[in-house]
Image 1 (spheres, rainbow, N blue to C red):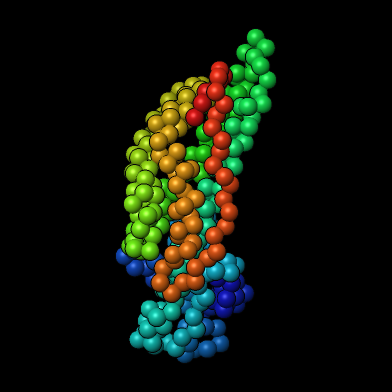
Image 2 (tube, rainbow, N blue to C red):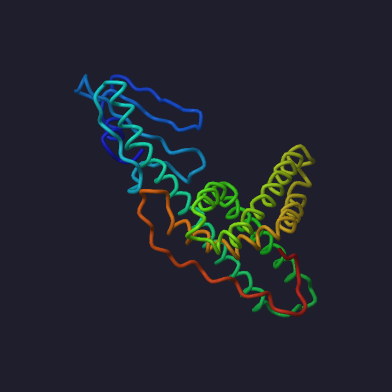
Length: 274
C-alpha cells in the first residue's frame, strides 16, 4: 500500500476490523473499517512478493480507496480504479528493478575489465593470481545476483512487450527472442544452482568455502550465453518497457544505462574468468 488514509489508519489509529482478501493470482487487498465512520471502508492493495520492498511511501503506488460499506459498490471501485492502478504500479516497479540491476551489472562489468587491464605483471609469487581469483568470485556473485532480477521480473515484461508487437516490430524479431532464450537458459541454470546449494549444505562444512567458490564459477560459466544476451539486449528491453507501458499508463522517459563493457584485453590472463 502507499502512504495514504489506510496506512495512516493502520499505523496510528484503532481499526475496528480488518481482513486480507486474496485472489487466485495472489493479489492481496487489505480491507478495514474506517475509524470513526461505521458506513465506510478503507481498501488498499499490498505489494506482491518478489518486489524490492513494500508499496508504503512509494509515490507511484496505487492509493487506497474510501468506499461505502456496500459489497457491490466496493467491488466496482476496486475493479475500476484500484486494480488497474495496482497493475501499473507493479509494472513500473518491475521495470525499475530490472533497469537498476542491469545498470549495476554493466557498471561491474566495466570495472572488472578496467581492473584486469591495469593489473600488474606476475611477480612469480602467485599472490596476484589468488587475489584476482577472489575478485572474479566476487564479480560472479554480483553478476548473478543482478541477473536474478531479470529471471524474476523478465517474464512479465517480455509477455507484455510481445503483446504490444506491431509498434516494436524490429525488437520483436531480434531483441525479445534473444532475451526469451536467455530467460529459459538462465532458469535452467538457476534450478541446477539451487540443487547444488542444497547439496552443499549437507556436505562437510570444512569444504564449504572452496566448494562454493568452485560451484559459483561453474554456475557463471554455464550461464554465460544467457548473461551475455542479457547484458547486450537488456538496455533495449528496459527502454521498450518504459516507452510501452500497459494501456492507460503514462510512458516513462528513457534513462541512460551504462555503455556495454569493453572486451577483455587480449593476451595472457590470470585467475578465474567469468
